[in-house]
Image (cartoon, rainbow, N blue to C red; front, side, top):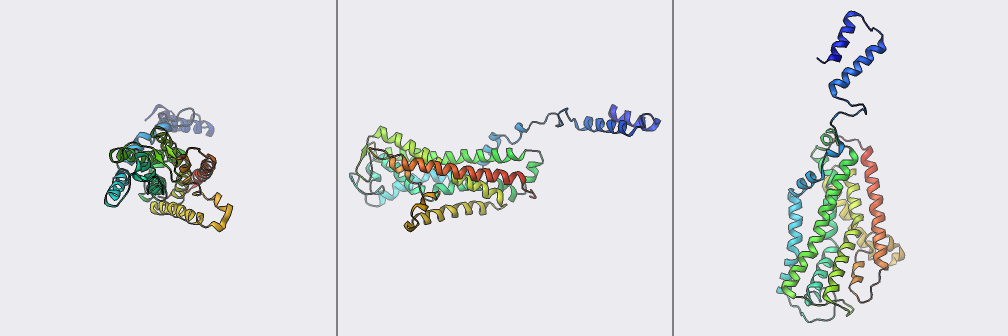
Amino acid sequence: MSKTDQAANAALDTGVHTDPAALDELAEAARQERTEIGPDGGVLGYRPRRTLRLGVELRRQVRRRRTQLVLGFVVLLPFILVLSFQIGRSSPNRRSGGFVDLATASAPNFVILALFVAGGFLLPTIVALFFGDTIASEASWSSLKYLLAIPVPRHRVLRQKAIASGLLSLLALVVLPLVSLVVGLLWYGTGDAISPTGDAIPFGKSLVAIAMATGYIVLQLAWVAGLGLLLSVLTDAPLGAVGGTVLVAILSQILDQITTLGTLRDYLPTHYSYAWMDLIASDIDWTNMAAGALSAVAYGTVFSLLAARRFATKDITS
C-alpha cells in the first residue's frame, strides 16, 4: 500500500480531515500514484510517437503473402511480355505503328509498353489493394479495437498505415519500369525511343522521360489511394474496399470512352491516365499532364480528408 493510501485510511479511521473535499484530494492523489499519472494528465512513460512505429508496420506488411505475390508478379511481368514477343512475330526495325508494334525496337520502347499495358488495370489494382486493405483488414481480424486500446491514437493508426501502403505502392510502381528496362536492355539493347508519330528520342533523354512518366503515374494514382483509404474506413471487409475502388476505376474508364459526354469527361479521375505518353515526343505538351496531376491530387486530398474525418468519429466494434 502506498503512503497516500495509508494517509487516506488513517484519516478515515481517526476522523481527522473528515472534510469531503480533503478526502477527495487524498483519493485523487492515491489514484494518480497507483496509475503513475503525470502533471499533464497522461500516464508517465507513455509516448504516442513510440506506438505503431513505421518500421514495424512495414515489416509486418512485407511479410504478408499478398505483398510478396504482388511484388513477385510485377517483377515477372516484363519476362512474360518478352516471352510473348518471342513466341509471336515482331519486327525490331519497325519505325511506325502503336506502342505494341514498337515495343521491340529498343529498351525504352519496351519499358513504355510495360507501363502502357499495366496502366489501365494492373497498377490501379495494386494501389487499391494496398490502400483498401489498411483499416478494413484490422477490423476483419477483430484486432483494430485492441490496437486502439494500447492506446494508439486514431490519427496515428490511419497515418502510419497509409504511409506504409504508400511506400509499398511506390515500390511496386518503381520496380516495374526498372525491371522492364533491365530486361529490355538484355533483349533489345539501347536505342532511340520511337513514338507512334515517328519522333525519335535519344536513349539518354528517353531514360529521363521514363523517369518522369513513372513519377506522373505515381502522382496520378493518388486518387485511387485516397478512395481505397476511404472505403477501407467505411467497411470492415477488405475485399469490399479493394473491389469497390477497382470498380470505380473501371467505371471511370468506361465513361471516358463515351465521347458524347464531351467536356464532362475531363472531370473523370482516369481521363488523364495516359497523359504521360506526351513525354515521348520531340516537342512535349505539358497541358494534359498538368491537368491530370491537379485532378488526381484534388481527388486524393478530398478522399483522404473524408477518410480521416470518418475514422476519427467511427464507432470501433471489431
